Length: 201
Image: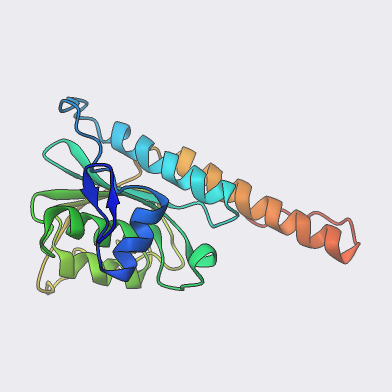
């Protein structure tokens, strides 16, 4: 393993990619921040989403906490890594497992700016965090109540998460809308039509 500061980079390829772009939050060794509002940690997830935005990725970000400390951070890197599974939640889950040395993310909370898709929700169930907190809902493809609900399934899967939605939801939605609006504008300009149609609002 290669060393980064006090921490070893993991051998696992997916985890290595997550560490490559940021050290998964394990450097956050300061005192526990007693901001027991979910808004603080969602704000941290938004910071990750803005990294995705700056990189031209769909701006979704995630952090995972345990006992009041951030143990993993990630942003959507599908285009960067050329990997359809490289959603923010998937990378954060892998980084958190590496941090804890266990695939079970017990006593952990996942914060993500957009409602998890079915792929991410399935992975979340298997990793068993205690809570999932997300910003804006996804009525077309969300798997935490927007379209279907895998996290609170009835009958339950092998694990059931407590779900909180709508935390900083407007900010999370605005960032996504801005990204897709700009992407549509670029396509219109490339086609030379100059026609701007806002489908997200």
